[in-house]
Amino acid sequence: MPWKECHIVEERLRFIARLLDGEKMAGLCREFGISRKTGYKIFKRYKDCGIDGLTDRSRRPYRQANQLPMQIEKQIVRQKRERPSWGAPKIREKLRRLYPDVHTPAVSTVHAVLDRHGLVKRRGRRRNKAKGTALSPGGQPNDLWCADYKGEFKLADKRYCYPLTISDHASRYLIACEALHTTKETYAFGECGGPHWRNT
Image (cartoon, rainbow, N blue to C red; front, side):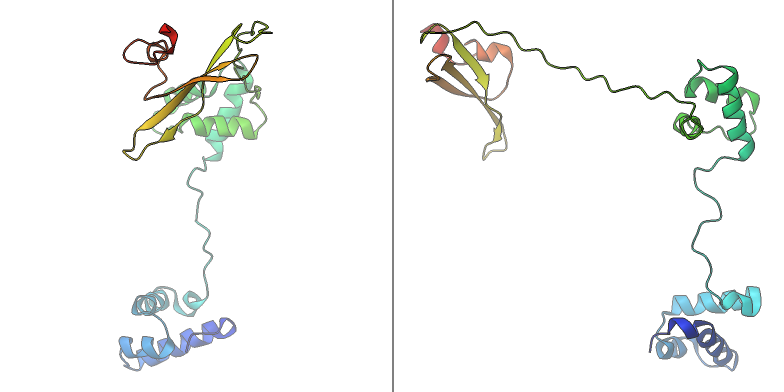
């Protein structure tokens, strides 16, 4: 039967006592409902630490994987305050030269330290907005035609199809719809075997 949480230390003690009395590991593990790997681990902890080794240990790692020594973190902050125009790459290079025997942190780690201490200015994302061409007012049919790719979709042979449509601006009448294998300009203008509507 599996061990109950509240009696875990007593169960482990009973397990160890019977093991020390000469019972076999495999049979005991089956009886206590644990794997042999767990059984050997409990026995090793008992041999290394005594009864204290039978209590649950914290699963928290001894140190964080990316945690820097406090001295290095202070040095990063100091370098930034002394030279506000320096970014993470320059500060990292300075640290590498100052402390050649110490593992140099990555640029991203240096940047994370600066950010944590409020020493990084956050820039707003620059978004390049596409500017379309202003359309001429096409009041009458055939005054203005519009060309547009209407998305893409995959064919049965795994190739993409890009439908190019030509429509009348005033009436919204669909003049042509050509299935192209690319959105390259030369194919849209009737060369290289593209649509022939332009020549008519």
